[in-house]
Length: 380
Image (tube, rainbow, N blue to C red):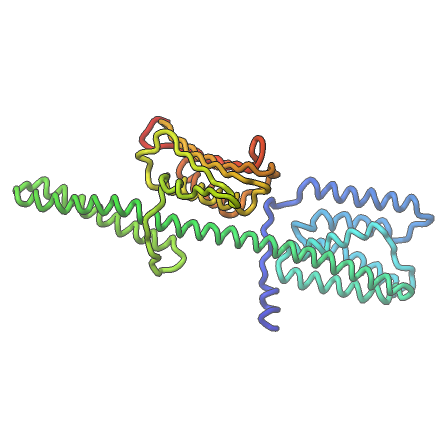
């Protein structure tokens, strides 16, 4: 129990996409004041603290997201002061229907505030709740009902808070997995070329020594040192990219030719057609691996999510300056939505290679993924 309380106390605040008070916060506050003014006009009589209560609530909604505890202090603190005054001096409690905005304050506290502010804010709310019961003893059922609705608003804030946290964790996990894959492919591609340089330098040393070429020997010795150092440094970077220090098994990377293995035909299955066109020779291993991974991910997504689809078409077209991959299905036209974690990770990888990835509803039906990658060493 103590560890749970400490964990809640140390809970950090949720980082909001845009910091500071926004224009719509001021609009919300103006709406609160306007609603209070309308309420005052239609009432037969206005109580002594009505205007001050309305101003306090408007100020609370302005700061509710930037300083959730201050919002609780302004809203519930004002309620506490008026209820306490009514209790001490025998006055009628201040009734303001616009006070329903305290639900937003409770939601904001649980949605954005850090742990210690949540604990302090809950204490302020509990104190006001106790005073309200004694100040309005004639209608305690209404007070208890209001407390139940307030708990629902706080619960909604809690659910959305941890749902957002979970989404961030899933995105970070996807990025870490992609980093591991990049580390493995970095070894398969770069290490091969660096190792070849090292072997050629060593062979050149043997030949040069036999011919007594002093200058050549010094140059080749320098190549050997630089290649060996680069290889060691690259292995160090690969180790840092991986989540653990234990080496993972390395295997051959997939290329454009392997995309043909994704083709599937037969009754009762989602047919996958693959077509390779144009000049696809001489592509760098990293480009080929990226094209295969995007094609594989897109076909997998089509199998999982395409509605009423019977065919997935995968087309790879090679040109002078680059290569294009298109994966589309003939299912029902899908609504626009945010890309999943797999495609988000691949979009980052495509961007590192200087290309672009676009995913969205097709022109006529289904879902379409389009990747364009430049061909290094050719005109762009």
